[in-house]
Picture (cartoon, helix red, strand yellow):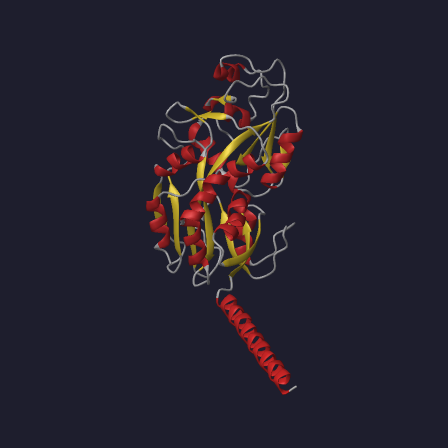
Length: 361
């Protein structure tokens, strides 16, 4: 009986030791997990063009968390600088608003807050002209549009897909009679800024000006956000609208092949957007002495032979001293971020631009 009791005591002691070791490992694991806890960037709002990229970075380069509402560039910057809730925000963001994203860089003369802030480009974006192919005879490789054709369409002077200018672009008529229905962003949009800035640069006949909002012809169809434009184009025979390449690919919409400054017809792609960015000029500027801002100029009508003509950079704007944004930007600029950008239809920034951006903080 004594021998049996000793065995029981030995087994009990061993079990207690194993249990204690297990508890210690779990506690150590919890401590390790806590030490590797995500850094919260807080709440952001702005351009819908970068939504897929921002969301993907959480998976490709974990280590930070945030909530981002793709409400448009103008609404995002207003939310950041005035700390007001963007209308119709989805997902719902709470205060404070910690950062914004915009395809339209803050102007050098603009002073919207007394706090110092930083603006850096994070990704290259192509603004594509997407169309509904119903009733159209689409050539192999897609519909081609010369500069005269697509500027005329958005000016409201070319109103049917059988227009002689479009027929000449494609070597034949692509429709007998399909009225063109132009879909535009009805919210304050960086994509509108990029498109209209480009059209103003290439066409002396362009009459609508340039900005995040313009007075489009009343016959055009307004839609909110990139998703709204995609839905309207997909559901409207003869429609054409403008949409960033990443959203365009997600929605499986065809994009026009556009004539660039060199006279070449170029489709939107990571390579052609990158080629446009390679011809850009990095400019450092500031709206006040403490702020640090950079933008990329010479993109309104890129001159390189293989450049996609409507290309831009999307910018991240955040207050100086905010925690975690250096990690976020470095993740966007790293190999994982570059691979993500390419897979989604964006373009990684050239190395020289990344180096300048990193130097701001």
